[in-house]
Length: 434
Ligand code: PHE
Image (cartoon, rainbow, N blue to C red):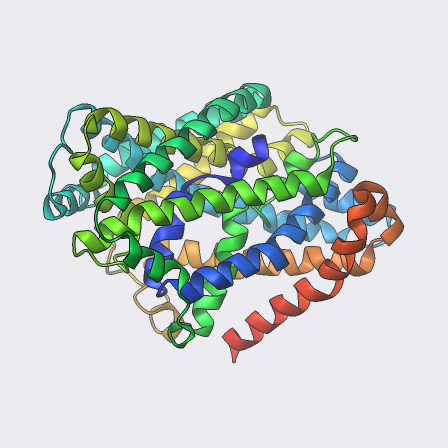
């Protein structure tokens, strides 16, 4: 359940719809689903398996498992990169998660009732234009993350996830139900599921791949760290399949809820990171009981983001803890640095919106610091970390050892992670570097 809490978050409800909109829909969704099945799921199995074998922080686990396989302890580098990836993600994730809080207040105050698309856009624009507000909510969210992380309350987290995830699911179903009444549901289905491969670029494939890792919390130490707590008698493969299914289900529901509203209100699918924050208030505003549903939704979104951000800090905290630093000190210290870095994301949305440090390269044209953190982690560090993980379990670890962890699933998993996943990863890299 903690792994589900980690996987289901802003990635599903905020990021998936907006990158699908930016990358033309159907073909992108299909590639994303293929990436989940062929690369994401096998890598998740690998990470949870390594985590359980090592029983330590991701850095400690990689060093230990590599050592016990008679390989270089330099494989700990995979853990170091993962920890760094999670850390960079946390810095901007906290800023975005912070947006849910002013939205909760607005929902409670009934501000969405009957709201038109332009007003909703203006409300969101106003939030982004205010560094002070963004900083305030970023600080509150980071504080919440540090609080749980410092306490090490995995059990409380699991109990909460068991109750709140189903609620989020039901609420998304209600939203999809509303979306069906807009008269644009068919159009949205077509957009999401009718692939038009002529709209697919090599970069879109990379974005789909990167998102498969991001949304499943892979190559960031999160799954490895949680794997360390998994009991011996639990099936790793079955657990991973459940997590991947739930995660994908939530993302697709979010897409089905949002795009009909986008089309019905003449909004732009490629509007970017504000997509759900502009569209959903319009939908809520037209529903009976708007204030209730909107409040509940943004509270659940905040919670989903929270259970993800806690897992981002876990790699670092568990590592420092191994090195003798208390959980409290590690969580506060890590949270503080991530908070500081997060301020550059706050500014990227307003004062520094024109600051594009790598703008001279075509690929990074127009990308602010925030865009670069996102790009660097999801599209470069995560695929690279996943490739190294696949190479390690597929070529450096004795198959008998992974088989002992995975049981009969090993027969299917092993050839995939040994050949199919690395080759698919290399192909995507090749077409993007070409
Ligand atoms: N999977 C989370 C989401 O979709 C994000 C995440 C990435 C969490 C990396 C942990 C580690 O929102």
